[in-house]
Length: 116
Image 1 (cartoon, rainbow, N blue to C red):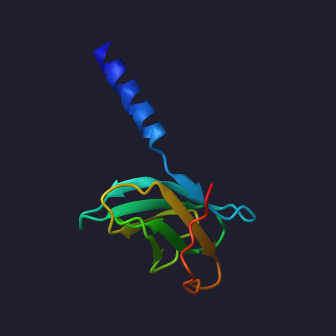
Image 2: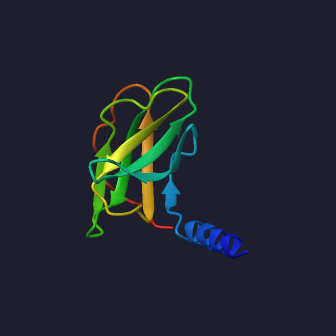
């Protein structure tokens, strides 16, 4: 019984702490799937690409000081596959804004996180 209560509390805590995620709505095929610690101490944001071709991904998150921080994928997210993008953060960001492009790496743009 105690184990069930603990598991329920863990589930509710994780749902309450879920980040606000902003992504393109016109071609929804790259999805944010969560985060995990990486071996080098970074946080790995995990994405899944369900498109039929690889995608380049731009991710914008607030850094430790709250300033917008732009990260580009150094390679394409494979088609029908997962990709971890390492960030120098201490926890999962509260807000994640990302875009993706199938043709070439997006040109870095101002990192503007939308308000909701």
